[in-house]
Image 1 (cartoon, protein in one colour):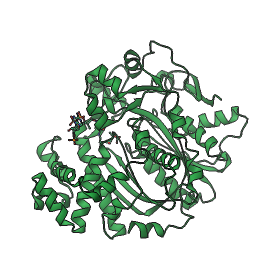
Image 2 (tube, rainbow, N blue to C red):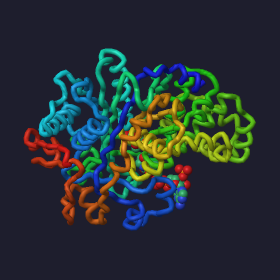
Image 3 (cartoon, protein in one colour):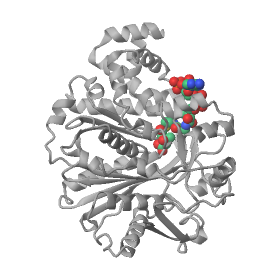
Image 4 (spheres, helix red, strand yellow):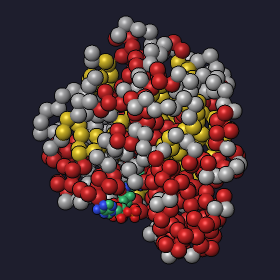
Length: 497
Ligand SMILES: CC(C)(COP(=O)([O-])OP(=O)([O-])OC[C@H]1O[C@@H](n2cnc3c(N)ncnc32)[C@H](O)[C@@H]1OP(=O)([O-])[O-])[C@@H](O)C(=O)NCCC(=O)NCCSC(=O)C[C@@](C)(O)CC(=O)[O-]
């Protein structure tokens, strides 16, 4: 069914034509992090990844976003005069009134100083928010734009975030920072996306992960504040349950639209790319999704064997996957530690030994080694994986012409999206311009005291070189962070070389 659906996509379908990544240079490897904190290195490598980036004091979500946009304009040869929308997806904005227009200002400034015309006056500048899903929702808006009133223009969506958790919390090894800019065109040159086959899910069921605005947050959670910092309030374990369940629900929604064997949604794509807060999270969600697909497809033989091996009752499992509100009801009844998916996960672990599920997991391999270097980028996490997967597929000369690709976005709170796409003809040319390795180059390994200083927004003990290849200079530390800085803070982002 996925194939039939993808075949219906004509070459003129809208979608992605390019991506560019920007990450700060300071890096913490999880091996060093384990030494500093006493965490188990083998567990971090198995569950989380390899490293994460930390922004410099001069960097914020707008400077990173602007750097990624400038890189996209240059790498993909985009004529700024054709841009009709510049959308920002973020959950780290520093201003509740505006967002993408600040990025626009920085991009215009850099273009002018390079002797070029700024973006046109009629560019739309929305900022889109829903936790880590804001980038995908912004991309959805852009896809709709280039199919309607923007059919003669291109749109740029930039997803940018700083993921920081309180030191010593369970989230600390899963930090990260960065931005991914995406070029959206009415005729995709990289990945055509068919929103008619998309599935969605949303539900409100208690505090898995929230970022109350600073003034409320500081009054309610003074223990979580260090100076002016505002870290997320979250329940890590419970948030993983919400992630898994929302992904299954969005898949069910996609399946309700496209029909056919639901297992095809998972084992036919050449790449299955998900929101990736840490390395193992997508695998856990796909395990539950595969169990649901097998139940829905009536593939009971393999399931019964897996249930037996996992010591889980088959009928209870089927009932678990059928009930629509069990997470919310369970949490209301038992508190946030309630883990209704434990049985599903136990069965999924047994199914992982199955050949068909191994094929599902193989589709999560493209680009994985690259994104293990990045940590959680919140809204930019899935876009970074798309960039990494295409860069990797191009470098390894994978036969991706016309291949199906499934994107699964998730944002706490919680909401998920499942989209089907097809790799566009001639994709290699656009993929060769992504240059994820180049974006990761020039990392500066942080010493423990400098990591802690940057985390607390103090000056590091050692002078760090200016963020490159974009120089950032300005007065005021962070736009709007201190009320007295508003109107004074001004950043300039420009290409250094
Ligand atoms: C998710 C937690 C709680 C995990 O925190 P933790 O302390 O690592 O949890 P754990 O001790 O239960 O261990 C996790 C897994 O590691 C395994 N393990 C143990 N030892 C070893 C070993 N030696 N070798 C291999 N594996 C080992 C252990 O068995 C377990 O496997 P599982 O039961 O999951 O299959 C933490 O990372 C956290 O709090 N993260 C922050 C929240 C988060 O990322 N949640 C993810 C879902 S929500 C989301 O994605 C949205 C988000 C966060 O991006 C924000 C937004 O949308 O805005």
